[in-house]
Image (cartoon, rainbow, N blue to C red; front, side, top):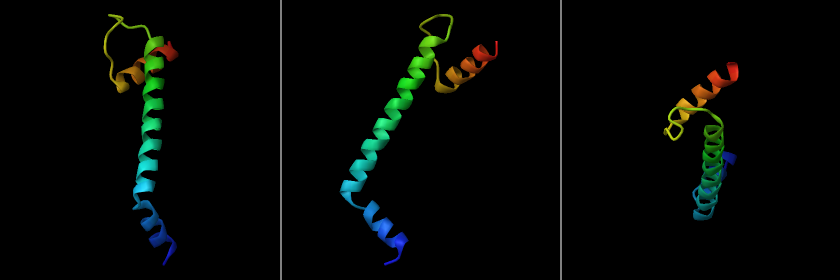
Length: 66
């Protein structure tokens, strides 16, 4: 078997998929925690306004450049 075929077979196992899903879940959770922390530091009116991730990034850019 070629290296690519071995890699493809390894990725097809349930154990690999479970491990990958766990890593992805941890990554997404860390990403969301980072956005929540950034959101907490930014001044908005009203203070409890729900912002999207892109709005948080744009507001942070404006706030930093000010």
